[in-house]
Image 1 (tube, rainbow, N blue to C red):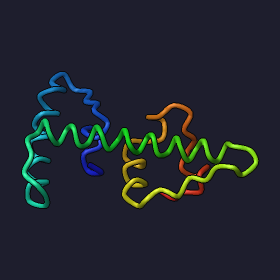
Image 2 (cartoon, one colour):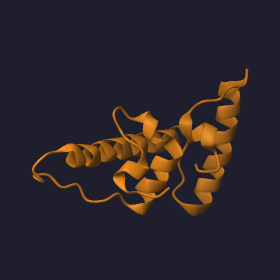
Image 3 (spheres, rainbow, N blue to C red):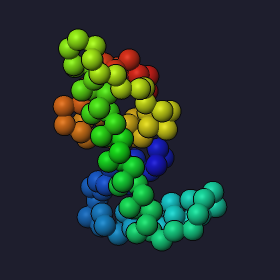
Image 4 (cartoon, rainbow, N blue to C red):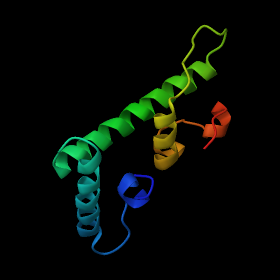
Length: 107
């Protein structure tokens, strides 16, 4: 996904955006089949959507723990994979999520 940033964000600015996105999903699906389980394009889209959602929720937990007073909550640091996904989707994709630098994370 890091090499398919338009696909990762779901935003294509060309007139044939949906067609271009479908072609990239097909190409990405073939690449993923070589390294993992066989899934349809719809299944890979679902995997990506769900994982992005989990990363957003996780960074919101980290953000909430960092904003809490009294050191009463602790959120373990993000895994390397989740850091990569966050770098791809950007912190602006979640509400009230500060930049990775504010969390002490490197991109």
